[in-house]
Length: 137
Image (cartoon, rainbow, N blue to C red; front, side, top):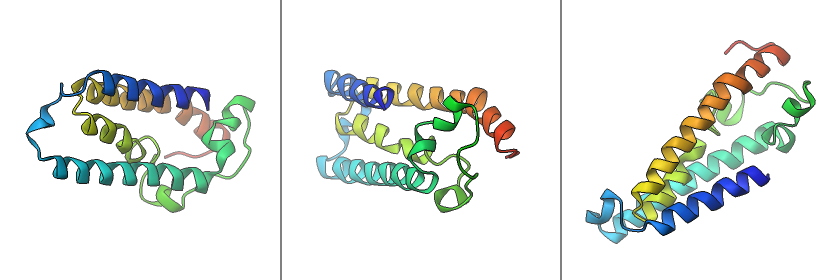
């Protein structure tokens, strides 16, 4: 939870400290706000839905810390449509914040953050899931 909080605060700081550095200042404020709200709702909604489906212990990687299975592998909810909705669609709110502040550096942070999350998934989490839950996806 501390890492997630730190990540969110960092994004907010980077985006707020570089307001107006992005390429979106040509958009009308109404269009920017509509896109921002849409991205934020879809991203946060997907993240909350995903966490609800797998459960908070899995959301915080309790199984990985314990090194054992603590629930069942889930293929329902958003997982029915996406292999990893939290790391994909669930990151849209990060881009929404960068868009809201018209921050190029926020956008770069969002892209690096998402790439790092997927790198973690591919190198650490997916091998763990395959080994412990016996899933090949």
